[in-house]
Length: 67
Image (cartoon, rainbow, N blue to C red; front, side, top):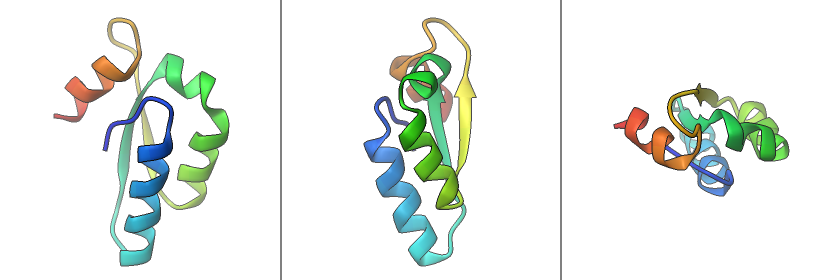
């Protein structure tokens, strides 16, 4: 999954945890700093949050990296 504010990442991490699946969430490094609480929630649910440091380090770059 890719996410900016983190809500999609938390939802995806929750579903993956309930189904026993692995979950990788791609976020720009800037968004990770802005949304530390949601990153904590994703990690608590077992997701791996991948920090993207290309370009502006936001949702656009995270989407490109996820694909």
